[in-house]
Length: 383
Ligand SMILES: *Cc1c(COP(=O)(O)O)cnc(C)c1O
Image 1: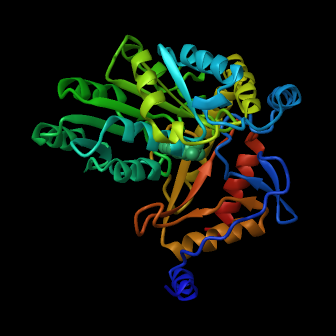
Image 2: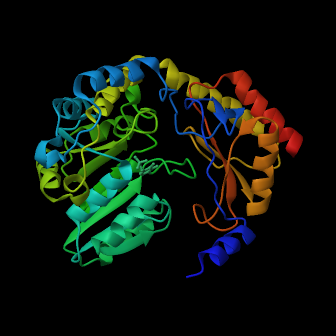
């Protein structure tokens, strides 16, 4: 009841969150609360969030079609720009069909609840994104969580299950750790136990796979038809826009159009965003230097932290968390960086397990080697 007291309690635990006000475009140099910082704190992995070609595509579409979709997709909100983008996205990731959602959070709620209900079971990696946890609760399916990346544990649980419908859900790149799920092995288990496999590639799309086409394109075997495989990617991270899409069979998409409540009972995203994503896809595929720059930065970071007292978690993604431990220590470090003009917020429980507070370094293709060197120098001073 007493929210003041509860907030004070959060303060005491070092868990109170506050928002910063961004006054510039998103990027590696940002103005926040009146000051300019070097930022390692966005999911703009390819440096596309404020790309002029994407902004121009959005403006042009807004001028032609206005901003608001003004209706849900099943009434009159489904625009030709949405329809065209769904075709482009399906082709881009190599699946028969795709369906747009307004956000990744809503896509996860919609897909899971449309596929499993009371008589079903959702098998989930313990470190899956919060939206998949909430999706499980909303679905009322049995929520069976397996130890992080532990396929032996997952198989035990699948073997013991009597559920009518089974869905295995996993992040492909874990958002607070940056490590990768063993996607091909997960699919083999799904097929063996007659379960769907739902892959949340929020942090992989644009970054992983040939041409940034996502995690499926890192594994040639996954590109053949697999009816059990359901792919999700979000469009607000590497793609630099907003929204999400699910890709799979035509039948799957047809089912979701009919049953995914977060698709049906919400206003369609502005068509201008679909135009922006179309422009973004061209840059993702056409500018491989962005992914090459990320690889160079990852190598530089791994070499550079060797002289620091904190370890990097093992990660081959742009998410490179520096493990600090205590909440207050992580906050002190983040404050020290802020004083040195670097924005790199501390990630604390409940977002990550107790005792594993971290500085989650997000690399972007827009970072230069000199900027990363600046971060490494500041960390060394603070150590
Ligand atoms: C960011 C994220 C989401 C949510 O996507 P939004 O489009 O931001 O709502 C879902 N899953 C994972 C793994 C994410 O990292």
